[in-house]
Length: 164
Image (cartoon, rainbow, N blue to C red; front, side, top):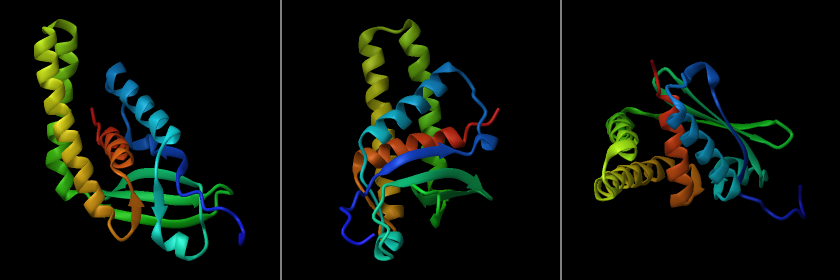
């Protein structure tokens, strides 16, 4: 691949369907929007594959295995490049908080005043932003990425944690 221009981004992302239970239309919409926005614009530079000359774009498959996030990274020919395993213990609270505030938000958009909806949405964005910062910390040294990409990845991590 010498001579090719590096393309450090995710071109395709999938989630482990076996761990997902579609709770409602709101969650499904969040998943669709996060995937669409992520594919549309992201920065994703996995350090070990890049050091081995694999300059992207990448296919990513997210799953939860034994309470840990598995991020399988492949090239566009579907060749496995690396699987990152991240402990999720530090994400449990932000995930719980995010689910709780999202439930409040979905209820509010159906019956609350615009001011109440805005207050809840600001709290939701704050939790989401803090979780994205935590994800950036956890990926440090493994993947170079940006804040918007981390936010969208956190949304997808949450989707993986939906249980009945």
